[in-house]
Image (cartoon, rainbow, N blue to C red; front, top):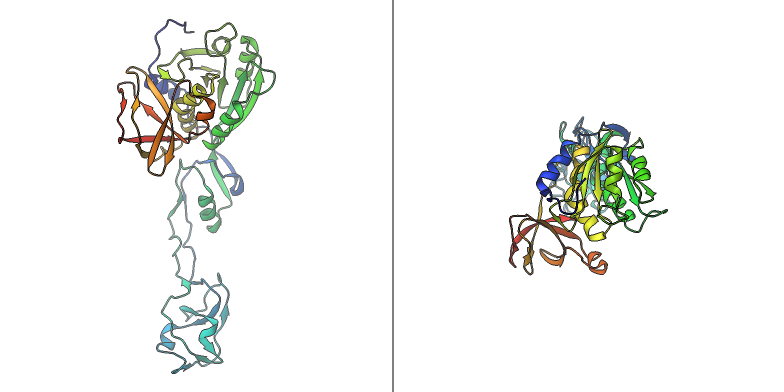
Length: 363
């Protein structure tokens, strides 16, 4: 375990060490309705063209457009018979390629012309056979759900890591753990929250309990008399780092127990959130086999200053394409809850001047 005077582990080294403990969890197949938010374990392709044949996009009469070319109220075109009526979504009869609105027909007379394909969807217009509906490593969104349902996919293989969130120091879950549980779920994992006293034995017991893929220990990571999380991890397994060059979040740490990664998160909200963004979310992504997100950027409204040698999380709020820095360490809760993203300032930088384009870590 680290002592207060020990050197802080660089964030990049800590992240590499934590990721080395994580392998993608085994996939499990779930009904499509339960797959929302999970990470796709395999790439799913359209097994056939969708739609398989021309279909109607609106209600109306099915016609061959060329047969009523030039039709108008002043020059009606008489059809051999009254055309078939279709509802939106119906398959088009053979020999027809357009849907004439109801007002375009009077008896057997077409009184309006229409272009070929108008009011219809061509075969394969949604997807061709073999098109990717969702790629391995993508988080399955409601939009993916729509595509998969349209392709008659009923079951999906996902990776959804199981995270045990241990809230220390209180008989009941604290005020911070619900937010972290929600962030864990938003990252594609499931969270089980347990509350334990801030003592090594109950912390170790909660860490070693089966049924999870990784453990997050919240609180008790400092060096006060009641901070016992690192001792609990040492009793359950191995402490690989305690004290990181991350601000806020210097007292964070990590290790392993029973072959599972364990992340120690500080109990102060700004520091807990910083450690989660810098380490917890990448750990979940490694366990889920998730693809890297496309970076989002924004333009700083004012400068960010930082201390060289420490990676620093600075919270921010977006205003369109611009971002307003709110602060980092010791940020009051009333300001922290305004944040909708963060900027990670690398340890070799002193910050960013106003007007800089920076990468934004979304919350």
